[in-house]
Structure formats: structure tokens, C-alpha cells
Amino acid sequence: MQSNPDITKDMSFNDFKNEIINDYTIAVTSRECSLLGRREVLTGKAKFGIFGDGKEIPQLAWAKAFINGDFRSGYYRDQTFMMAIGKLTIQEFFAGLYGHNDIEADPMTAGRQMGGHFGTHSLDKNYNWKDLTKQKNSSADVSPTASQMPRLLGLAQASKIYRNVKGIDTTNFSTNGNEVAWGTIGNASTK
Ligand SMILES: Cc1ncc(C[n+]2csc(CCOP(=O)(O)OP(=O)(O)O)c2C)c(N)n1
Image (cartoon, rainbow, N blue to C red; front, side):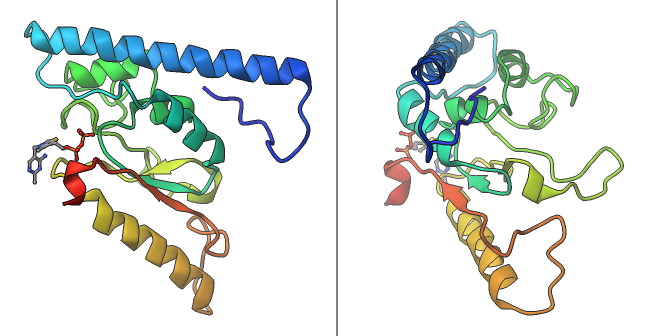
């Protein structure tokens, strides 16, 4: 997981060095997961998989700008990003790939969805809202290509409403509408 340094301030050489090594570790870990995961799928041991290899570096950069309260609405290639924000471990990645039906093992969908369908929890174990302004959020991925885009617009629109409409209780959901909705999409899906 990234250390999220304050990149607007000066950094010591040592902190910079540690950050680079940490980033490199995440990138290599994610790449190895992709290669191993693909092998598991192609040899018939896992049901289905699309992986995030090739997008490690931009996603590390994205994760540095992504702060608590922000939302992701993306697609199956966001594997490195999810690892970098601390929402996907190696073990969870493979639990998702093998369709492990325990929510503790696969916190994304408890094996209900295909691997690479990421998400974070907005409700706690008692089904009460969590404070979404204090965590990094991802809407739950669905399979149709480009379906993340209307949802991305909806998330951005919600922030706009929280900012501009007086009298709305923003508790748990918004910090004056300043949270950012981030999106990713493949080039074929833009057509
Ligand atoms: C509506 C719909 N049609 C077809 C598919 C099958 N499908 C899954 S991924 C994919 C290719 C998407 O390519 P692109 O958007 O360029 O993303 P990339 O995987 O190359 O990053 C397709 C056609 C789908 N998921 N949804």
C-alpha cells in the first residue's frame, strides 16, 4: 500500500527513496499477480480473469492523488490502483479469481462476481452507513463495458448537489461536494 506522502511539501531524500521502492514493490506484485492469475485461468483452474498488467505506473500515480472521500467508478484493469489504495491484497485477489464465497476472503463480492470486479463497502456489518468521507471509495464494478460511465457522472452530480443545494445533510457522504469522482475506461468502450 502506498504511503501517500504530502506531495505538495518538500520531501527528504530518504522518504523519496522509500516511496520509490514502495511503488516499485506494488507494481511488481501486481504484475506477478496478473501473470500468475492468467496462467491459472488459461490452465482451467480459475473461471475467468482479465488482468491489470501494463497499467501499473499510471495507476500508482492516480492512487497518490486519490484521497479519502473520493470515489472510483472504473473497470477490471484497475487492479494496481486497488492494491495501491490498500483495498486489495494478493490473497483477496486470488480469492476473487477462484470465486471464494466467503466475504472475509473476497471482500469485493464474496465470489458472486467474476474476478477483477472491484468495490468497497459503504455499509458496516450491521448495514449502517459508514462515513464515506473518511475512506477511499469504489462503486461496485459491473460487467457491461462503459457501464461505469453513467455511474461516474451520477457520483459527480451528487457532489455538485451536495455543494449547491442548501439544507442537505451531508453527514457520512460529502465534504461540501469537494470529493472527486474518478473514472477509467478502455479505448474500445469509448466508441
Ligand atoms: C456490453 C458488452 N459487450 C461486450 C463485452 C465483452 N467484453 C469484455 S471486455 C471487452 C473489451 C473492452 O476493451 P477496452 O474497452 O478497450 O478495454 P481493455 O480491456 O482493452 O482495457 C469486451 C468486448 C462486455 N463486457 N460488455
